Structures are given as structure tokens and as C-alpha cells.
Image (cartoon, rainbow, N blue to C red):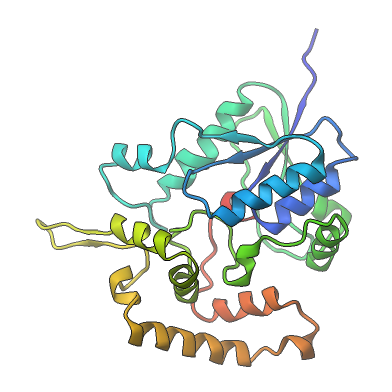
Length: 268
């Protein structure tokens, strides 16, 4: 007797995967919801997942309970992940998800929207088949906002200053987002800063933000400069005139600073 295929939806803590979970709630009642916990997430992310569980009417399985970021950082010799070596995505997101799935036949639901021209995480394992309901059904960003609003979930609070889910020290953060972390979570900023180091033998610096350390970034004159640049970018995109939500305008302004695409399995 063949085992029935499983339906699994991975949540990142972002708006698109959250909206997809709500969208699929009644369409696939047997859906399994998972969240790969790096143990370095913002409290706003954990709070959002708790709210989402209430709406979904079932729990979200947290993976990585025993092996978080610090465990893998030690195994990688203390070298911070970067855009060139994304071991955090591989070891903290992809690996635990594939271990959770095992060898079962699984349909993996991905929150890529119809108005996006990008791909999501697609496993190379032959037993995992990706499914893109938003693309198939023509769901766009405006629809995502509507789904979240009608469900009473809304947006994660971190969208007030940040446009991407993921670890509080994610190296894909833009300068203005680091300033947001400094001002809203100074304790986490200090913890992120403590991870940075200088190799005394080679003189190579290992920092989260390209071109400068967090110690350099937090200097009052540098913070003022970053805020000024961000305000200037925001001023070019008046939300009321365009009809966009503030979070959309904020994201576009940040893209002037850095439009590097983050790891989608962390960001959807």
C-alpha cells in the first residue's frame, strides 16, 4: 500500500508565505506548516507566527530546535556566512527541511507571486515537487495584502523598518535596516556586532555589512548620513500619489541602497 503524498508549506515569517498559508488553509486541510528556526529571529517574527497559528487552526512545526546558528558557526570555524558562502541557508533552512521531508513524496508549496519574475527554493530531491499556487492563480502583491487583512493577521511589525524576514543579523540587510535594528533592538545590534571579528594573521575583517563594520556604521555621523540618504530616496516615491502601501515605497527606497536578492527560502 502506497503512502499518501504529503503537502508541506514552509513559512519564512514574511508576508507572502503567510498569505499563501491562509490561502491554502481550506483548499488543502491536510497541509503541514513548518518554520526553520535559526534561533536568531526577531521577536516580531515569532509573534507573527503565533498569530498565524491561530488563524490556521493548527500548529506550525519549528525545525532546528537543537541546532541553531551558533552550532553551525562553530563547525564552520567561526566564519560568518556571506552572499558568497551562504552556509546559513544550506544548513539552517534547506537541510532541516529536507530531513523533515525524508523520502516521502511531498508537494512543497512556494509563495512566489504572479507579479514576480524569480524562482523559489526547489529541492533537487526527486521526491519533492514544487507547487506555485499564487503564480497559477494570478495572485499579485495587492492580493497578498488583502488576504492578510481579511484574515485579521496583517503584516509583521518588522515591516515598519525592515522589508525582509530572516535573522536579525542577516547580511542581506541594507544600511537603513541596520540603523532600524540599532534603534529598535539595540541589544540585538550589540549581539550582531559581537560576531564580527578581525583575523590578526591576515588582517581580513569579517563583518555583516559590506564595506564597514557595525561599529563604524553605528557612529552618530554615519547614522545621520544613512538616514538622510534613505529619506531622500523615500521622497522620490510619495506613497499617496502612487497608491502604494508604505511598506512597498520603503522597499523600493531601500533598493536604491542595495537591490541584491536575498535567499528566497528565508524571505518569502
